[in-house]
Amino acid sequence: GTSYEFIQVSRPRPGVAQVTLHRPKALNALCTPLITELNAALAVLNSAADVGAVVLTGSERAFAAGADIKEMAPLSFSAAYTSAFIESWSALTTTLKKPLIAAVSGHALGGGCELALMADILYCTFGANFGQPEIKLGTIPGAGGSQRLARAVGKSRAMELVLTGRPFSGDEAARWGVAARAFPTHAELMDAALDTAETIAGYSRVAVMAAKEVVNKSQDLPLRDGVEYERRVFHSLFGSRDQKIGMAAFVDKKKPEWSHE
Ligand code: CAA
Image (cartoon, rainbow, N blue to C red; front, side, top):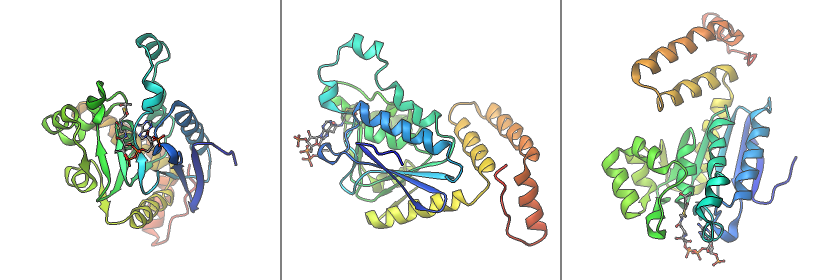
């Protein structure tokens, strides 16, 4: 496969790809070349027929300690504006149609926290260190943190986190619903993330993609429109082969053999 400088891509389970952020000298600070590699890798995985779900992780010490402060320090307004700085990070949420599970250990600060919040499912260790400390640097979150945190934890708590920059633990993240689940150790976290990815990869790709799409719509649409959108997509799945395969298998008391069509 392709070799990258700042990330590693592996296939730890059937149907599962793992992308590991690997810039240990900077605690996986998210420099532009790292994001470019991440987007390239996700585009490849998105079109890989044998991949049904992706796990995104860092090291035990750091998921990612933020955008690269050394890269940002000298940036001017016009350079940031004209290069659409950080905009390319959103490719994570638009390129990949397959489920992305973030497995977070250690630091997930600033852009690292925001990257984790972009995932479809977030798992972490109890000891993970989340936060939006940008205020301490004289700036604000720039990769969706204020918006996604407010949706995840409510306005008052998001306001407190963004205005004080205080970190929050993986334990808090799970209690607040930012994380779906938290685990005592990095090893247990990785096992669970890969198990979940393998489960998802074992289902019909077309149904999984549709499920991800409709849940994501809930974040953008008013309830009435979202429910209508869901029903439209639900109706459309009667046109898939896998709906016939899945329901026939249930009726025949057999295990479905998905066509992914
Ligand atoms: N950017 C660039 N380099 C970083 C970095 C970052 N965000 N975070 C850590 N590093 C580098 C350090 O400079 C250090 O490099 P050197 O060895 O060359 O000095 C190396 O990684 C190890 O870091 P520390 O020595 O600081 O490790 P520590 O264990 O003492 O502290 C830490 C860990 C608490 C995470 C600390 O590194 C830290 O506070 N990092 C910055 C966190 C932060 O403010 N993130 C938000 C960035 S702004 C942003 O993300 C904007 C946005 O919304 C998109």
